[in-house]
Length: 170
Image (cartoon, rainbow, N blue to C red):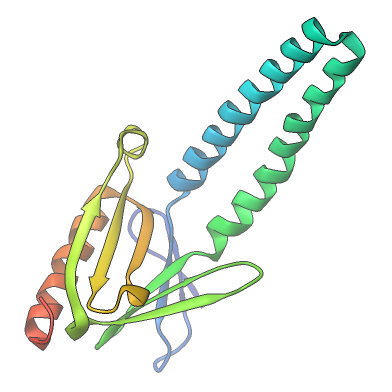
């Protein structure tokens, strides 16, 4: 059963025993697609100008390759964005991602040592933040990208509270 959550992000409830999954907000997809168009668009213009001026106008057709990359990347970014989700359970946090190779990370609250909320300049411009979880084992560090800053802070506070309650980590 699909339910709506605050912020317009869809969650999936798999029943009383299953986790309630929360997807990432669409702002992350918009940001990544805009960056794709800007960088590959600049690459297409640069390639077309350089090849057109230095080698000849026929070679400028190679500028279409970055444009094809925009179309391909557009689809792949959408698939990747849809694959990301997270679920808060009683004893741990689940993070699932991946299109071809599905990866599910389970982070027990008691093993968390640090919970960070980060937001770079581009993320801040789009109103996004990331939550990064650190554990003693470097292999289990996990990140949830592209969250609304209020949701990221709520998640950080909740995870910190639960980690302290389990008293093995934070």
